[in-house]
Length: 342
Ligand code: CP3
Image (cartoon, rainbow, N blue to C red; front, side, top):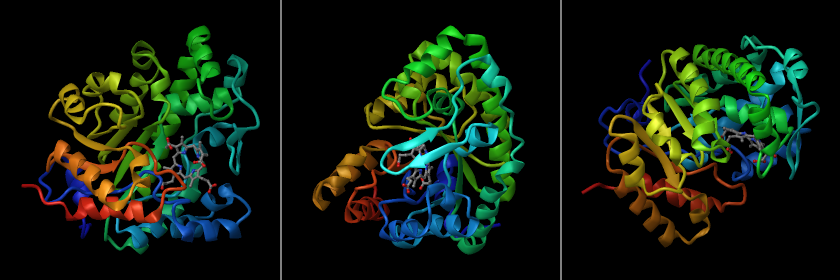
């Protein structure tokens, strides 16, 4: 299988690229009028991700509208907790709410490791997208990181501090490790299922890395990222641990190809901490995209120059915010695609 545009994969593997590839976390979603129109026609978000034809359509919307260098399969990180035995509702303007949460060892006993087969609807959507893409650009698969999924399972939804989830880590350490290990095994099966269905690269989102201390991260997140990265075979892996610049040196030891960065640390410092080997992804502050075109262009060019012409995948430092003007998004993407390194 030869992709017509394999810039993202070459950049991930550290091979020579003639320009920096670009895609956006959360590119499939509310920034697009096409998405908002389709979303009105279905009962809820979960109905959308569980329907392979519609998930395929939404995955392809940003490819057509924005000209990005990769598609990301339309789904959510919360499908894993759900399949492990904790169903959730996605409430408009509120976010996810779990009907049950993990409070003690007994609750963990009632959960199970998924073997990945339960998520057939995601694999079916992947097959449909691959067929439609016709080898034009790569397709990204994804999962939440064990710590981030654990945080939702204990907390039952979003939180400013994740203090319930952290309390569980610090007061029920053994049980916490047991659950983190069960999540890791589920994630491995799920990512392998996505790879078997055809994704070309995978990203692991550790969205709540930033609420942990370096010690806690080393104890409760990193070993499980290691376990997953050691088990995954066949495609490059991107790890995005948001707000965890304190862990960049340790990330060197994780068997991933790409490390995603948020905007909270100078690019040169991140590179210094991580070393020269891995590709970096990121890291424009998504709020820059609310600015006018000239400012977006300037900030994007400054970012590109800082990262350099190789071993970089352009992206934002977090998912694009739903109310971002489409013109701002397009300006960012077009600036990356047109930029010429001296
Ligand atoms: O384009 C893409 O990136 C692919 C689709 C995707 C979604 N969620 C769709 C979605 C991806 C990769 C995710 C990952 C995800 N989901 C993360 C990690 C990335 C991050 O933002 O840190 C997290 C933490 C979640 C959990 C989640 N899903 C929350 C907290 C929410 C509610 C907040 C929100 O953004 O609305 C969701 C809902 C969600 N996931 C939407 C979309 C398009 C909005 C649903 C809608 O249409 O109303």
